[in-house]
Image (cartoon, rainbow over all chains, first blue to last red; front, side, top):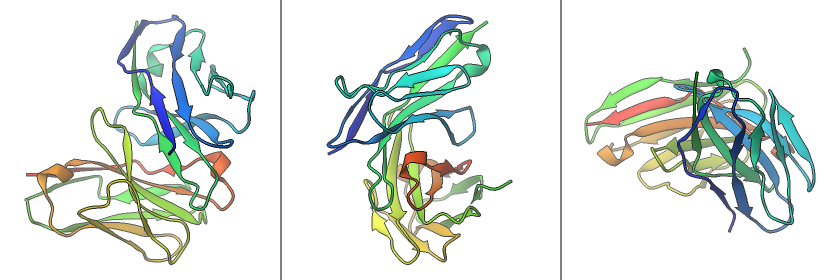
Length: 113
Length: 114
């Protein structure tokens, strides 16, 4: 079946540090890949997405590239801010009936000033 | 603002009580979902409705029932609450052919069963 594996957190960084959160997946065919962000006390918000191999999703300074050869979709940001502190979820979708999403376990990011 | 609305935001139940969590979306989405989020376990799918008139079990359906009342509304019912159902519950929706766009989530219902 489909699965998503994320690095365990928490990840603690100083402001302006470089961020990488690893995400790998197991799936047949060609899923779409997503990163969601959850700020404290809120629901999940779509951060970025990629729908085919070698696509790069980007938003708010975050980037992730769909790597089919390594089945990965790692999230990166060049310079994090305190306001980026949140939980980040990697997910995949097979665009099948019901548009089912499979989520990773989430990675908590804490950015210190 | 358009989106997914969940009620209530917070609820405390005694073991054995029943309640219904409400969810409504105004984006004309076909598919709706209920997830629970527990510490260290990410999101787990309870039930989903691919389209109006259909519902299917997800990963953790035991102890829950759902109703897709119409295209807008998808409710989750706990018939006899148990402490193991203490969690944060999220409703989400997605449009037809929009699997590539992912889901829109509600802000969650924090449920405590004592």
